[in-house]
Length: 237
Image (cartoon, rainbow, N blue to C red):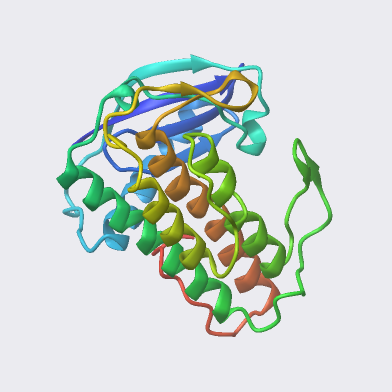
């Protein structure tokens, strides 16, 4: 099984994205470590969407695009646009990917609700490129929910962050679908000159959910050892 990947890196620090599994990713201090994590990521991703990988299946990573960046890749800062993300979406493809993005929001909310105390964390304070790293379930949830207006805004949709992560995301899609030719709009330059498209927004939602859902799940299982923390994303950690 060949996993086509986009490799974004700052020197050795690596983000590796699986092109054909929207939002699936690994990261590490170098490409080899990120590649070594890809099998578990694909297994958990397939489990999340109700599919599976045969136990005997081998995974080979093929780098189809490389982006050298000056961003803080180690903190998951990114601005890459996949070559494939410039293409328009068919209605069928859009509906399929939209359902996954909404499923991701529902699952993120379910994970959040399963954390016993949403303001307690065993994690130390740490600062990153955008501010303090979210430590508690509440901080992780609010941070993840509140990219809604930002992501949609980059492609000209005046969305908000009100309500749950699912509610504001669903409204964003409803506003998007009111725009003429929303499936075939060209790539646009958004904030700080970063290039965006509808395909990129769909991928970024799931990718961003997975980053912070994984962090929340790890934090919660350590902080509340013995409690039943939900694992809707099927992380293998």
